[in-house]
Image (tube, rainbow, N blue to C red):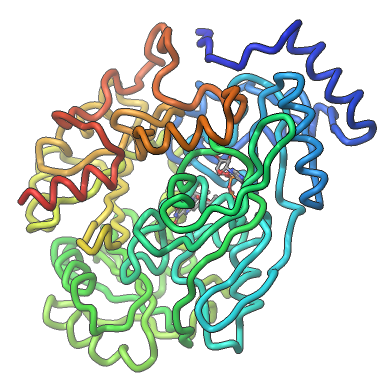
Length: 491
Ligand SMILES: Cc1cc2nc3c(=O)[nH]c(=O)nc-3n(C[C@H](O)[C@H](O)[C@H](O)COP(=O)(O)OP(=O)(O)OC[C@H]3O[C@@H](n4cnc5c(N)ncnc54)[C@H](O)[C@@H]3O)c2cc1C
């Protein structure tokens, strides 16, 4: 099934245009087939076999690996002049097909544009390709650390997180990346001839967050910091998932408790975290946490109120195999399960703010077995947003749709993560302000084309087994977290 995506219309053929860029930049573009394959992929298969099938075989025509801002400007300028699509890329750990070229063109891989530029007691400024783990390593001893990072921290880049990420470890206290104040500013190269270099601050910078590479090339990012702690990895074991979820919900609300992460999971999911087996009593649910040393006592007390007890308490990264506990949470919880369950697809949703445990129970009772449940806890615009990654057996026809519908019926807000587009029902919708910004920084529509809403023609036939309709939230005109915010505020 071929899907046609709107690409920019170069003059002449796409091959001629790419050849013109290559002629402008001798020795810069890489066309080795192995490199093209490697740098045209992301990690979508982890959450959606449908997305993986749809993206299979999509390739860039060339790759550029700039190490300086001037090199980025040169590549962008030439692509803009010849009408060649551009796909910015960090480490390629994104899971929504975001860094996969839908219309060929040049992948600009920013992973070699690295370095911490400066930091003080409140902020840090880095080059785009700096790994998130390297930022915190540089900050070590300064008293500051990043407010939040994805569980892919060791491999993900700063700009990749800002442009393609949502939130993660730290979001239980600081909210998500899109929340006001969690991104201070960024330096952006526009896709025009000649490219402009913009410093976007505050609200303007927020318009680039989660734009899936469709709004210029980020070369520097400025993050706010929080106070560093000697975090402890703690596992709490609970007789039932419901008890674990109630504990995690209370922990999300309890601002006085200094925690950086909490994720309840059911006994089935826990059984896939094999290195942790000794700390996960069989048949029990678990909540995986990151807790400040001074808070362990009170967090343990709260767990006991809900029937839970600690089974592990070590310095972060000192647990089995030296893996930090956060590498079993957020996206990583799915990664461990997906290693064994090749047909797994994820139905991703937010539980309602009020009585999330009750909605979860209704949902699980409706969908029956088997499902794999993990629930990273976060705040979204100050409200508790317990996010369920519900693993589903996608080889059963109609199962993903059935679970999607049940989640909406139970009051959850489902994000459509099985199509590689921003738009209705997806994590983020491109609203008018974002559209204005996109037009300003990419007037020819060359930046990661094929990402905004469905392509005009739309997928001709749904992929076998794929959900046939997206989430059905009435009047959904915003992205996932904005819709969550609106729905919660109206309660
Ligand atoms: C195991 C696993 C766990 C994960 N856990 C989380 C999690 O906890 N939270 C979360 O939010 N995500 C998570 N993710 C998704 C992903 O890892 C993160 O969002 C990560 O921050 C992406 O960084 P990256 O460098 O790999 O970006 P990429 O995947 O390379 O790119 C992501 C998007 O940003 C764009 N982009 C990249 N660099 C630039 C640039 N310099 N300028 C403009 N656009 C750019 C790309 O075009 C793409 O659209 C996880 C993924 C995996 C595989």
